[in-house]
Image (tube, rainbow, N blue to C red; front, side):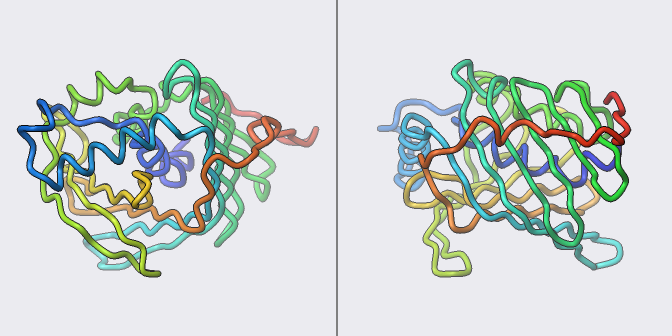
Length: 234
C-alpha cells in the first residue's frame, strides 16, 4: 500500500482544492488579492463540469537535496454529492506506468509491471500522509474548519507564462505536514500545489494544457484488469 501514497497523495490534494473555500468573513473585510482569489475559486467551483490536463510531479528529499520527477495525464469530474463522490483518473506514464481510478470514494491502483492492483476506499488509506489524502473526501465546510485564512497571497507567473494567484494554507490543528501552497489561474483553477512536510520534504504537482468542461467518458474511471492481475485489498 505504500506505493499508493507517493504516487497519488498530492494529486488528491490538488483535486481537493477544486472545492476549497477559506474560513474568512465578508469580502468587504478581505484584502484585495485574497478577495480576488476567493472569487475566482468560487466561480471555478460553480462552473467546473470536468477537467483534463497533463500532470507533472516533483518529490523533493530535503536530506539528500535531490528530486524525483513523474509525468502523466489526469481527468476529473466533480461529484454531485461533493468531493466524496468525485471521479478521477490519473495515469503516470514516466518513469513508470501507474494507473489510479477514483470513483465515489473508492479507488483502484493498477501497477502493470507488477501485474497487481490495489482496491479499497480512499478513507482507508493508512500511513503518515493519510490525513492529507482524506482532503479529497472533505466538504467545503470541513475544509474551512481545517484551514484558517489564506497566507502569503500574491500574484505569480509560472513557467510557460501562466499568470496565477498564490496562497498558503496552514492547518489550524494537528497535521502530518506543515502547509500546502496553491496557485490558481485566471479561471480560478488550481494549476499547481506544493505540500511541505514537517521534515521539509515537499511534493509539487503542476497541471498544464488544462481543458475545462470537455467531454469525458465515464468509462475513463473504470480499469479493466487482465485476468492474471493479483488484486490486493487496501
